[in-house]
Length: 117
Image (cartoon, rainbow, N blue to C red; front, side, top):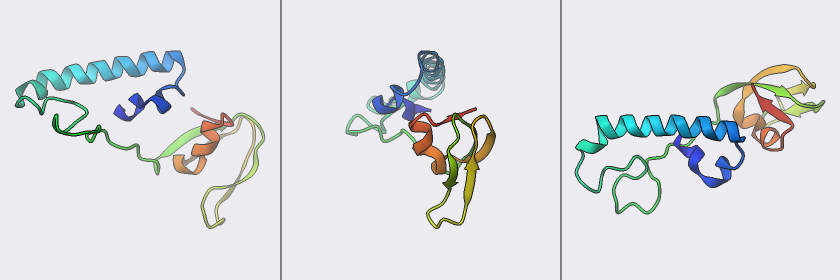
């Protein structure tokens, strides 16, 4: 969930989603601080960086784009290619629910043509 803090991703969230994500991150940070981080030596107490010498957030995991998600098409998209080889094609119809790999429809989600359920 830490990858959401990156500005380009954070800005895509609705105000309600931002409040929810912030609460979750605050709870997780508090838990990690109390259970682990406060016991580590100075310079290693960050939830985002391995040490103070790290220049970027190297403790932030990347999301698993291969994960299956539930989604709904906001409009009729028609035949959509799910893979690079063109072997998997799905007809996306407005209002219908689908279970697909996120990486296949990431562009449609970002464009607002498909929403996650």
